[in-house]
Image 1 (spheres, one colour):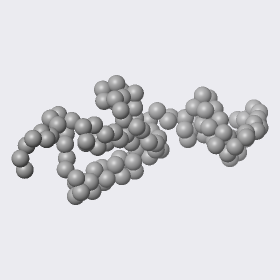
Image 2 (spheres, helix red, strand yellow; image 1 turned 180 degrees about the horizontal axis):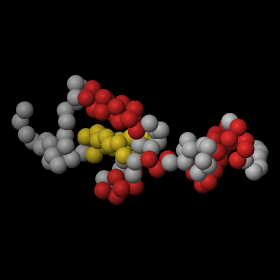
Image 3 (cartoon, one colour; image 1 turned 120 degrees about the horizontal axis):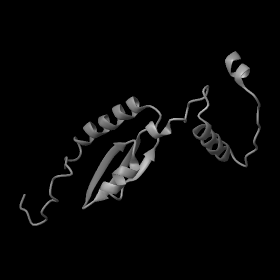
Image 4 (cartoon, one colour; image 1 turned 90 degrees about the horizontal axis):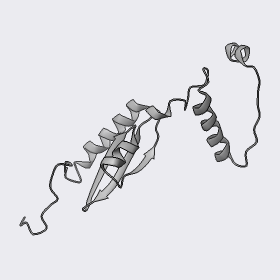
Length: 120
């Protein structure tokens, strides 16, 4: 804490209308200035997001740190996050994928859509 105070050259206080506005302003300032002592949020581009979309009666999931690239290749995903821990997010995402195998079947993106005329 002494290092933070020693290196500070000023303290600014900003008022916000809501708690959400305060949090958003804080995040924007951290991302803009990337302060040495407060790196939470400074590297948000590394934080994973979880995407979900519905295509041809299939529900598709993805996990990415670059949602724009996913949307260029596979439009229609809605993203949730970002989540700070890549490891915890990855563990949770892949655990969900394993659980879904018990209640659904797996289609890869390369699989053709199911034939509605096919006999079971």
